[in-house]
Image (cartoon, rainbow, N blue to C red; front, side, top):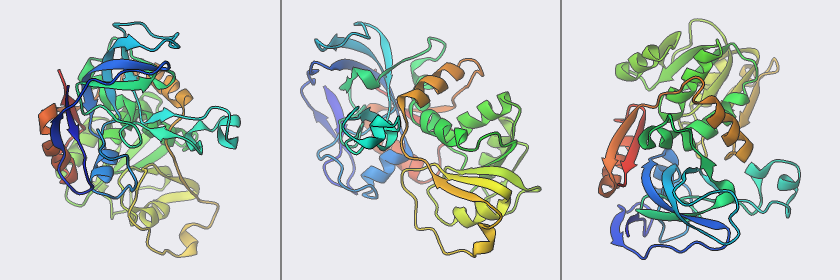
Length: 329
Protein backbone atom coordinates (compact mmCIF):
# COMPACT_ATOMS: atom_id res chain seq x y z
CA UNK A 1 0.00 0.00 0.00
CA UNK A 2 0.97 3.63 -0.41
CA UNK A 3 1.42 5.67 2.76
CA UNK A 4 2.77 9.08 3.73
CA UNK A 5 5.16 8.58 6.63
CA UNK A 6 6.85 10.87 9.13
CA UNK A 7 10.41 9.74 9.77
CA UNK A 8 11.54 12.65 11.96
CA UNK A 9 9.95 15.82 13.36
CA UNK A 10 10.16 18.96 11.23
CA UNK A 11 10.72 16.88 8.09
CA UNK A 12 8.30 16.54 5.16
CA UNK A 13 6.30 13.35 4.99
CA UNK A 14 7.67 10.75 2.59
CA UNK A 15 5.60 8.66 0.19
CA UNK A 16 6.40 4.99 0.85
CA UNK A 17 5.28 1.54 -0.26
CA UNK A 18 4.49 -0.57 2.80
CA UNK A 19 2.87 -3.96 3.44
CA UNK A 20 -0.84 -3.88 4.12
CA UNK A 21 -1.18 -4.30 7.93
CA UNK A 22 -2.85 -7.38 9.37
CA UNK A 23 -5.48 -6.97 12.10
CA UNK A 24 -4.94 -8.56 15.49
CA UNK A 25 -7.92 -10.32 17.15
CA UNK A 26 -9.50 -7.03 18.31
CA UNK A 27 -8.80 -4.98 15.20
CA UNK A 28 -10.43 -4.36 11.85
CA UNK A 29 -8.58 -3.77 8.59
CA UNK A 30 -9.92 -0.64 6.91
CA UNK A 31 -9.60 0.45 3.31
CA UNK A 32 -9.19 4.19 3.77
CA UNK A 33 -11.32 6.45 1.57
CA UNK A 34 -10.65 9.81 3.22
CA UNK A 35 -8.65 11.23 6.11
CA UNK A 36 -9.14 14.78 7.33
CA UNK A 37 -6.09 16.85 8.20
CA UNK A 38 -6.05 18.18 11.77
CA UNK A 39 -3.99 20.85 13.46
CA UNK A 40 -2.83 18.09 15.83
CA UNK A 41 -1.21 16.41 12.81
CA UNK A 42 0.63 19.67 12.26
CA UNK A 43 1.77 19.80 15.90
CA UNK A 44 3.14 16.25 15.53
CA UNK A 45 4.91 16.92 12.24
CA UNK A 46 6.34 20.21 13.52
CA UNK A 47 7.70 18.56 16.68
CA UNK A 48 5.45 20.46 19.09
CA UNK A 49 3.94 17.20 20.34
CA UNK A 50 6.91 15.12 21.40
CA UNK A 51 7.51 11.37 21.45
CA UNK A 52 5.35 10.15 18.57
CA UNK A 53 5.92 6.65 17.30
CA UNK A 54 8.51 6.88 14.54
CA UNK A 55 8.33 6.19 11.72
CA UNK A 56 4.67 7.18 11.84
CA UNK A 57 1.71 7.26 9.48
CA UNK A 58 -0.21 10.35 10.70
CA UNK A 59 -3.94 10.96 10.49
CA UNK A 60 -6.77 10.40 12.95
CA UNK A 61 -9.96 11.43 11.16
CA UNK A 62 -10.36 8.31 9.05
CA UNK A 63 -13.30 7.16 6.96
CA UNK A 64 -13.18 3.81 5.21
CA UNK A 65 -14.72 0.38 4.76
CA UNK A 66 -13.85 -2.78 6.64
CA UNK A 67 -12.03 -5.40 4.58
CA UNK A 68 -11.13 -7.91 7.30
CA UNK A 69 -11.92 -8.44 10.98
CA UNK A 70 -10.04 -10.03 13.84
CA UNK A 71 -11.43 -13.13 15.47
CA UNK A 72 -12.69 -11.27 18.56
CA UNK A 73 -14.58 -8.59 16.60
CA UNK A 74 -18.31 -8.92 17.23
CA UNK A 75 -19.62 -5.49 16.26
CA UNK A 76 -18.80 -4.78 12.60
CA UNK A 77 -19.07 -6.63 9.32
CA UNK A 78 -16.88 -6.72 6.22
CA UNK A 79 -17.99 -3.96 3.85
CA UNK A 80 -19.33 -1.70 6.62
CA UNK A 81 -18.24 1.95 6.58
CA UNK A 82 -16.68 3.23 9.80
CA UNK A 83 -14.89 6.24 11.23
CA UNK A 84 -11.71 6.15 13.31
CA UNK A 85 -11.02 9.00 15.78
CA UNK A 86 -8.03 10.28 17.79
CA UNK A 87 -8.68 7.99 20.77
CA UNK A 88 -7.45 4.61 19.61
CA UNK A 89 -7.10 2.54 22.79
CA UNK A 90 -7.69 2.73 26.55
CA UNK A 91 -6.99 0.21 29.28
CA UNK A 92 -10.65 -0.09 30.28
CA UNK A 93 -10.10 -1.18 33.88
CA UNK A 94 -6.47 -0.70 34.92
CA UNK A 95 -6.46 2.99 35.81
CA UNK A 96 -8.68 5.13 38.01
CA UNK A 97 -9.74 7.30 35.10
CA UNK A 98 -11.23 4.47 33.09
CA UNK A 99 -12.81 3.05 36.23
CA UNK A 100 -14.54 6.40 36.87
CA UNK A 101 -15.85 6.91 33.33
CA UNK A 102 -13.06 9.29 32.25
CA UNK A 103 -11.39 7.23 29.55
CA UNK A 104 -10.22 10.40 27.80
CA UNK A 105 -7.67 10.69 30.63
CA UNK A 106 -6.58 7.03 30.62
CA UNK A 107 -3.03 6.53 31.89
CA UNK A 108 -2.40 3.96 29.15
CA UNK A 109 -4.24 5.59 26.26
CA UNK A 110 -2.93 5.34 22.71
CA UNK A 111 -3.85 7.76 19.96
CA UNK A 112 -4.43 7.25 16.26
CA UNK A 113 -1.80 8.93 14.13
CA UNK A 114 0.48 9.46 17.15
CA UNK A 115 1.15 6.22 19.06
CA UNK A 116 -0.68 4.17 16.41
CA UNK A 117 -0.36 4.40 12.65
CA UNK A 118 -3.17 6.44 11.16
CA UNK A 119 -5.00 7.23 7.97
CA UNK A 120 -2.52 8.93 5.63
CA UNK A 121 -2.42 5.59 3.82
CA UNK A 122 -4.50 3.29 1.66
CA UNK A 123 -5.11 0.87 4.54
CA UNK A 124 -5.04 1.02 8.32
CA UNK A 125 -5.96 -1.18 11.26
CA UNK A 126 -7.92 0.02 14.29
CA UNK A 127 -9.33 -1.42 17.50
CA UNK A 128 -12.97 -2.11 16.65
CA UNK A 129 -14.10 -0.88 20.09
CA UNK A 130 -12.96 2.64 19.17
CA UNK A 131 -14.52 2.80 15.70
CA UNK A 132 -17.86 4.44 14.94
CA UNK A 133 -20.53 3.56 12.37
CA UNK A 134 -21.26 6.59 10.20
CA UNK A 135 -24.60 8.00 9.08
CA UNK A 136 -25.09 7.40 5.34
CA UNK A 137 -26.18 11.02 4.83
CA UNK A 138 -22.51 12.08 5.16
CA UNK A 139 -20.32 11.31 2.11
CA UNK A 140 -16.78 10.17 2.90
CA UNK A 141 -15.13 13.59 2.56
CA UNK A 142 -17.81 15.33 4.61
CA UNK A 143 -17.78 12.65 7.32
CA UNK A 144 -14.02 12.78 7.96
CA UNK A 145 -13.90 16.19 9.73
CA UNK A 146 -16.55 15.04 12.19
CA UNK A 147 -14.09 12.58 13.73
CA UNK A 148 -11.86 15.09 15.52
CA UNK A 149 -12.82 18.71 14.94
CA UNK A 150 -16.39 17.54 15.47
CA UNK A 151 -15.90 15.10 18.34
CA UNK A 152 -13.37 16.99 20.46
CA UNK A 153 -15.03 20.28 19.52
CA UNK A 154 -18.29 18.84 20.83
CA UNK A 155 -16.65 17.88 24.13
CA UNK A 156 -15.40 21.47 24.49
CA UNK A 157 -18.85 22.78 23.54
CA UNK A 158 -20.50 20.67 26.26
CA UNK A 159 -18.17 22.24 28.82
CA UNK A 160 -19.85 25.63 28.22
CA UNK A 161 -23.04 24.34 29.84
CA UNK A 162 -26.16 26.31 28.95
CA UNK A 163 -24.31 29.44 27.78
CA UNK A 164 -26.46 31.51 25.44
CA UNK A 165 -23.71 33.79 24.09
CA UNK A 166 -20.66 31.84 22.96
CA UNK A 167 -17.32 33.09 21.71
CA UNK A 168 -15.30 30.95 19.29
CA UNK A 169 -11.63 31.98 19.10
CA UNK A 170 -10.23 30.58 15.87
CA UNK A 171 -12.70 29.75 13.13
CA UNK A 172 -11.35 26.61 11.49
CA UNK A 173 -12.42 23.00 11.26
CA UNK A 174 -14.01 22.57 14.69
CA UNK A 175 -15.63 25.99 14.92
CA UNK A 176 -17.28 25.80 11.52
CA UNK A 177 -19.08 22.62 12.62
CA UNK A 178 -19.92 23.65 16.19
CA UNK A 179 -21.44 26.95 15.11
CA UNK A 180 -24.03 24.97 13.20
CA UNK A 181 -24.92 22.99 16.32
CA UNK A 182 -25.04 26.17 18.43
CA UNK A 183 -27.41 27.89 16.00
CA UNK A 184 -29.55 24.74 15.84
CA UNK A 185 -29.85 24.90 19.64
CA UNK A 186 -30.73 28.60 19.61
CA UNK A 187 -27.46 30.02 20.90
CA UNK A 188 -25.58 33.07 19.63
CA UNK A 189 -21.99 32.71 18.41
CA UNK A 190 -19.41 35.50 18.35
CA UNK A 191 -16.54 34.48 16.06
CA UNK A 192 -12.97 35.70 16.53
CA UNK A 193 -10.34 35.28 13.82
CA UNK A 194 -6.76 36.38 13.34
CA UNK A 195 -6.56 40.13 12.74
CA UNK A 196 -7.68 41.16 9.28
CA UNK A 197 -9.03 37.75 8.24
CA UNK A 198 -12.01 39.22 6.41
CA UNK A 199 -12.67 35.97 4.53
CA UNK A 200 -12.82 33.95 7.75
CA UNK A 201 -15.13 36.49 9.36
CA UNK A 202 -17.46 36.44 6.36
CA UNK A 203 -17.47 32.64 6.47
CA UNK A 204 -18.51 32.77 10.14
CA UNK A 205 -21.35 35.19 9.40
CA UNK A 206 -22.50 33.00 6.52
CA UNK A 207 -22.81 30.10 8.97
CA UNK A 208 -24.88 32.17 11.40
CA UNK A 209 -22.46 34.11 13.62
CA UNK A 210 -24.12 37.03 15.41
CA UNK A 211 -20.83 38.94 15.20
CA UNK A 212 -17.39 38.27 13.74
CA UNK A 213 -14.20 40.26 14.29
CA UNK A 214 -10.51 40.27 15.18
CA UNK A 215 -9.41 38.19 18.16
CA UNK A 216 -7.70 41.16 19.80
CA UNK A 217 -11.01 43.04 19.99
CA UNK A 218 -13.73 42.78 22.61
CA UNK A 219 -17.13 41.57 21.43
CA UNK A 220 -20.03 44.06 21.39
CA UNK A 221 -21.47 42.47 24.54
CA UNK A 222 -20.16 40.19 27.31
CA UNK A 223 -20.12 36.46 26.59
CA UNK A 224 -21.41 33.65 28.77
CA UNK A 225 -18.60 31.34 27.64
CA UNK A 226 -15.79 31.09 25.11
CA UNK A 227 -13.97 28.22 23.42
CA UNK A 228 -10.40 28.74 22.26
CA UNK A 229 -9.83 26.53 19.22
CA UNK A 230 -6.68 28.32 18.03
CA UNK A 231 -3.43 27.09 19.66
CA UNK A 232 -2.49 30.61 20.74
CA UNK A 233 -1.83 31.19 24.42
CA UNK A 234 -2.32 34.97 24.29
CA UNK A 235 -5.99 34.36 23.49
CA UNK A 236 -6.60 33.11 27.04
CA UNK A 237 -6.44 36.58 28.66
CA UNK A 238 -8.41 37.99 25.71
CA UNK A 239 -11.19 35.45 26.23
CA UNK A 240 -11.25 35.99 30.01
CA UNK A 241 -11.76 39.71 29.39
CA UNK A 242 -14.60 38.92 26.99
CA UNK A 243 -16.67 36.70 29.31
CA UNK A 244 -19.09 37.99 31.92
CA UNK A 245 -18.98 37.18 35.61
CA UNK A 246 -19.27 33.43 36.13
CA UNK A 247 -18.24 32.83 32.53
CA UNK A 248 -16.28 29.82 31.30
CA UNK A 249 -13.26 29.78 29.00
CA UNK A 250 -12.46 26.37 27.49
CA UNK A 251 -9.10 25.63 25.85
CA UNK A 252 -9.97 23.01 23.25
CA UNK A 253 -6.61 22.16 21.71
CA UNK A 254 -4.13 19.44 22.58
CA UNK A 255 -1.26 21.94 22.25
CA UNK A 256 -1.08 25.69 22.86
CA UNK A 257 1.70 28.25 22.91
CA UNK A 258 2.62 29.65 26.32
CA UNK A 259 -0.07 31.62 28.11
CA UNK A 260 1.17 35.07 29.12
CA UNK A 261 0.70 36.32 32.67
CA UNK A 262 -2.53 38.19 33.31
CA UNK A 263 -4.06 40.14 36.18
CA UNK A 264 -6.18 38.23 38.66
CA UNK A 265 -9.12 40.60 38.18
CA UNK A 266 -9.99 39.09 34.77
CA UNK A 267 -10.28 35.64 36.38
CA UNK A 268 -12.02 36.88 39.51
CA UNK A 269 -15.82 36.96 39.89
CA UNK A 270 -16.00 33.19 39.50
CA UNK A 271 -14.80 32.96 35.92
CA UNK A 272 -13.56 29.46 35.08
CA UNK A 273 -10.58 28.54 32.90
CA UNK A 274 -10.31 24.89 31.89
CA UNK A 275 -8.92 22.58 29.23
CA UNK A 276 -10.37 19.68 27.31
CA UNK A 277 -8.34 16.53 26.73
CA UNK A 278 -9.08 14.02 23.99
CA UNK A 279 -12.58 12.50 23.87
CA UNK A 280 -14.64 9.61 25.15
CA UNK A 281 -16.61 7.17 23.07
CA UNK A 282 -19.75 8.60 24.60
CA UNK A 283 -18.81 12.02 23.18
CA UNK A 284 -18.54 10.37 19.78
CA UNK A 285 -21.86 8.58 20.00
CA UNK A 286 -23.68 11.73 21.12
CA UNK A 287 -22.17 14.00 18.49
CA UNK A 288 -22.54 11.56 15.59
CA UNK A 289 -26.20 11.14 16.55
CA UNK A 290 -26.72 14.92 16.65
CA UNK A 291 -24.80 15.75 13.46
CA UNK A 292 -27.38 14.44 10.93
CA UNK A 293 -30.24 16.05 12.87
CA UNK A 294 -28.82 19.58 12.60
CA UNK A 295 -27.69 18.68 9.88
CA UNK A 296 -24.05 19.71 10.10
CA UNK A 297 -22.47 20.45 6.75
CA UNK A 298 -18.69 20.34 6.57
CA UNK A 299 -16.73 22.63 4.27
CA UNK A 300 -13.87 20.57 2.82
CA UNK A 301 -10.77 21.22 0.74
CA UNK A 302 -9.75 17.93 -0.92
CA UNK A 303 -6.13 16.95 -1.58
CA UNK A 304 -4.78 13.70 -3.05
CA UNK A 305 -2.99 11.46 -0.54
CA UNK A 306 0.34 12.23 -2.20
CA UNK A 307 -0.18 15.95 -1.50
CA UNK A 308 -0.36 15.56 2.28
CA UNK A 309 2.59 17.93 2.71
CA UNK A 310 0.81 20.58 0.66
CA UNK A 311 -2.32 20.15 2.78
CA UNK A 312 -0.29 20.58 5.98
CA UNK A 313 1.42 23.67 4.54
CA UNK A 314 -1.94 25.19 3.65
CA UNK A 315 -3.20 24.58 7.18
CA UNK A 316 0.01 25.96 8.69
CA UNK A 317 -0.32 29.20 6.70
CA UNK A 318 -4.03 29.66 7.43
CA UNK A 319 -5.15 29.12 3.84
CA UNK A 320 -7.79 26.50 4.64
CA UNK A 321 -11.44 27.44 5.02
CA UNK A 322 -13.16 24.61 6.82
CA UNK A 323 -11.14 21.35 6.74
CA UNK A 324 -8.47 19.90 4.46
CA UNK A 325 -9.22 16.25 3.60
CA UNK A 326 -6.93 13.72 1.95
CA UNK A 327 -8.69 11.68 -0.72
CA UNK A 328 -7.24 8.20 -0.64
CA UNK A 329 -9.32 6.41 -3.28
